[in-house]
Amino acid sequence: MAKTDHVPLPAVRRLSLYLRQLEVLHAGDHQTVSSKQLGAALGISDAQIRKDLAYFGQFGHPGIGYRVPELILRVRRILGTDKTSNVLLVGAGNLGRALFSFRGFSKKGFEIVAIFDNNPEKVGRVLDGPTKVTIQPTAEMDATVRDHAIRLGILAVPGPVAQAVADEMVSAGIRALLNFAPVTLQVGKEVAVSSVDLAVHLEQLSFQLGCVSG
Image 1 (tube, one colour):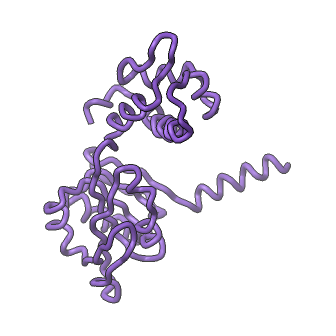
Image 2 (cartoon, helix red, strand yellow):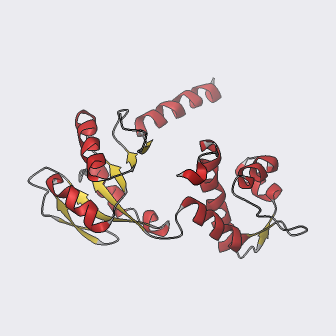
Image 3 (cartoon, one colour):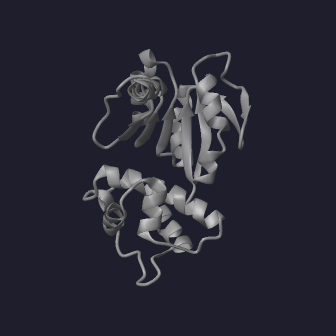
């Protein structure tokens, strides 16, 4: 992603927060917003917001601030969510099925078009979520990735097999992984990985709860 080579990752992550708040404002029929108002809603300084957006060009209008619909479109374009991206999911267990059923992905431009699992009792079953998808064996991953031009993948398998499955996904052509397995994946520099360990998040909340309560 050459266009963001010079942009700190925290700034890119904050773009998603800005977009979410802008969409809330748009739903409330707000046509303009200042960096101060946006920052106040998110607990971020207005200077930080202006700095983050400045990495990608000029957005504000003198005397107006930001035009909400316009900024939404431009941030979506930066994040690559202004178009639909095909996504594959590996792991059709409880978590995988819940992720497939989550309608928030499609609202953000992500469509899970393929699901893989090597459990013979699951292969061939049709999952009915935002769309209907038949669970496939991982042996069919290469062809499916090629046929559907898939570059994004979600990994929702047990920790002991996660690295091997991730290797299969990368070999098939996946270049960005959302990892729900409780392990740190070892992949090449050409592959982006974002990991979500729900237990770790609860541990951090437990610590903060102790600090507040204590």
